[in-house]
Structures are given as structure tokens and as C-alpha cells.
Image 1 (cartoon, rainbow over the protein chains, first blue to last red):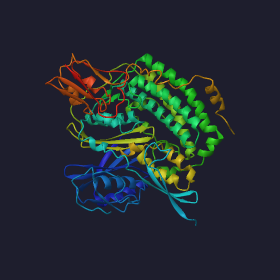
Image 2: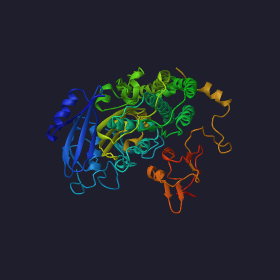
Image 3: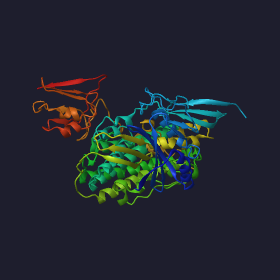
Image 4: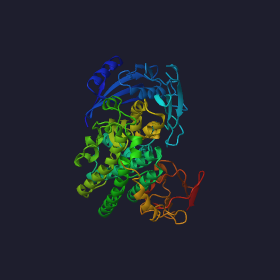
Length: 121
Length: 359
Length: 111
């Protein structure tokens, strides 16, 4: 199982996603990781079991990324999840649940330090 | 244009074993759009990994889902073994495949029963679950648990199955095959059942691909994609080819699952003939370090475990992408344009496992 | 066209013995190796506390002075880990489950 992780900038994201769509790749998942200083977003694609993952590094608070749900519609679930659990602002989600996707007792349960920042998307 | 109404479907509904809520926008009897909302049973199991020893977390991983429990535990172990650079002994891999396929058989039989129940065929439901019960008995005899197997550990497996026991299991499974062929015939040939399944919840090949469908949902639409083709845990030695149907409706998803029952039995048979005696586990040395995406094929489709570790006994992050989560967007597409009465059947054909999806 | 395709099966079932078990009139017999409740041979126990440290659900509490081994039956998930790690092999899993309970149910064993 070949898999590679490529570091990219936020500005490249939409371009890369379009490229992937043109190649007929499938969006496998979007994953967010809380590290001690930063947040990491991984956008994973798959074509015939060749696995590619693009990594973006964000600050822990007030990070914002554009949504790729206009390119891959199925991204809207992952993006809402990341918004609700990690407090990452994602702009232009196709179906935006406005923070009502997960009903957790603690807001941003997976990134509790980011208590400030925006509430409304 | 007639008036549009919104009908809430769930979170409590007779066909749903677990809570998911759909807002159905309907026009007369026709569904125009469906808007999902989940998050009723979010348990934060991914977060728990920061407080649990990586060896003990396998017990939590198994409890992410009650139906595909073994494969959840196994995928977690595969991720850990990759990070620890462990080589799993071949006998352990074969045993893992046998248990995975047993859990696939019991999950598909459960699904057949639930589907029969969804279109109101109570008797067929009971017959499917009767066969499933016998599979659960085999599982209890070999692992000690009926639903939570608890037989997988980082580095190998915790129990062995003796050669006589394996032959006995094969003999039993072959007799159950006659039983499931009989009820499979009813699912595929009976006019009333066909009437409820054929042409319902269509998902074209193109849609299935772009919306990221996985598992029987994808294979029912004519895409030959099955993670077992990548040959994880020794599937490459078993001569595996995926089951594919092309119609893309509920009927073809049902057919994929019925054909996969026979295929799973075949895989178990191949395993039993190829298996050799040997050690059951590799010793765990050191702590995991690095990051890895482990992928496996569950009864419902592709599951992904992303593990990131920094060389301590606690992982930094474990992310689980379950098949039901990936199958939600295709479900919404399949629902658009269907009749209100068909909604329960279509929702069931993705084999929803909501506590899996929310973790 | 196929109608009433189930009638053959239904008739057969009508004249055969029931497939369900007559529980609770006939007690359920679990196969050898089934994971039921944890039993302890308290005379052999050395109260080292390894089972307490390794228990994934923290169901076991071991105190050295006085020598008590306690288990919360509701928390225990019968995972067999304590049995695996016990240095004196004084723990074992029964094939029978512990009886139903509605709240925390502590069983204490004194040396």
C-alpha cells in the first residue's frame, strides 16, 4: 500500500483539489490533528489504491481554510466535523450546519485551548 | 408546483437501530431533498487515545462498533504494527482473516434480516437472524465473545483455533451455506421483494465515484473497489476478486451482500487449507513512532485509521473514518427523487452504523 | 414470477422443533473458552496490583493493607487482560456471566 504525505500551503489547496478531481481521484477523508503548537489538516485522496495525502499546518487559534466542497461535495461532512470539534473556520461549505453538526458538551472538544475566535460561520 | 413539506425522519424510527436524523423535504409523496444531522451519540473515543496505553486501546477500538468490532480492532493493530515495524506471523494473519470473514458473514446476515424487516417481511427477517445466531455461536466458541471478539492484539492474536476445530467450523459453515442460499433465493427471486428493491434508490457509477461511496454501496454501482484487493493481512495470498453488480439500485446492493456471503466462506476455506502451524504473535518492543493510514475493508466498506505517534506510550492522534460516514453523501443523493415509503429501505441499504460514524 | 416462495420453508419450520433456547427454564451453557466473569483464588494472590494497573476499565481495586481484592462487576468487560498479566495465575475467567445488576456492584475478597 503506497502512501505519501505532501506538505502544501493553504493557497494551493483548491488548485490541488481540482487537479485531483481531474485525475479522477476519490476524496477519502479529511482529518485534523491537534499538536502542541499547531493544527494539522490532512486531505487524503485515492486512485487505484495509491494514497496521497496533502498536509496543511494551521495556527491553533483563528485558522481559516477555504472549503473544497464545491469540488468534492462529500467534503461537507468532514468540514463540518472539523469546524465543530476543532474550531477551524472553513469558508463556503456547501451545506453548512453552523456548528450544529456535533452536539458536544464542551465546544471544540478536540482543541479546547481555542476558546476565543469566531462562533458564527 | 405543489406545496413542499418537511418531514422529520428519526432520530427514533423503527428501521433505525441507532439515531440519525434526516429532514425530508417532500412534494406530495416524492422526496426532493434530504438533510442529515448526526451527533446524537458522539462519544469522543478518538480523544480517549491520549489517555490510554496504545496496547490497551485495542479494547476501545473494538468497541467503536458492535457489528464490525473485530475488523476495527484489527485495523488499529495494523496501524500500530506499522508504526512499531512489527512483522505479524503468518498464522496470526490467517486467523485474523478467518475472524474478519466470520464477522462479515454475520454482519451481512444481520443486514439481510433488517432489510427484510424494513420492507415488512417479518418471517424472512427471523430466518436470516436464525442463521446469524449460529455464526455467533461459532464466534463464541473460537474467541470467547459473541459480539466483541477480543481476540486481536498488537503484534498478533490472543487465541488459536485447533485444526479439528477449523474442520468442524467449515463443516458447519457449509451447512449454513445451504440455508443462506435458500433465503438468498427469496431475496433475489420473490416478486414482492423485487418490487420493493428493484429500481429504488438508484446511484450511478459516476455518482458513486465522485461522492466517495464505499463498500457494497460502491460495488453495487459497478465499481470494483475493495480494500481487500490491496492484500493487507495476507489477503493477497487468497486469490481475492471483488464482487461487483452494475444496476446501482437497492436490489444490486442486496445481491452484492448475498454473493459476498459465499465469497467469505470461500476465503475461510482457502485460509484453512493454506494455514501452517506457527507462532501467534510478535513481541512488542519499544513505542510507536511516526504516522500511518491503515485501511481495511469492513462489511460496510472501507475503514481508515490514521495514527500519529511521537515515541511515547500514548498516541498523539487517532482518527477513525468509518464507512457509514463516507456513505452519507451517496445516501442523500439516492434519497432525492424517491417515494416517501421507500426511504426506510434506502437508508438501510447503506447498512447504517451511526455509533461507528460518530465514534 | 415467484410468489409465496417462502411457503416451503414455513411449512418445514412448522413441523420441526423450535430453534430458540428455552431460557430461563433450561440454563444456557456457554462453550469452553467463553469469556464470562472473573474469578480469583484469593489464597494464591500476592496483592501486587498489576491487574489493577492494567485493567482498561479500572474495574479492579487492590489494596495491600488490609489485603483486599475488589472488582466492580458492572465495569468489568471480561477482556481477559488481568488473567494474562497475573504473575501468580490466580485469576481465571468463568464461562458464566456475572448476574444482572442495576448499579455498581462491588465484590470484595479478603485474604
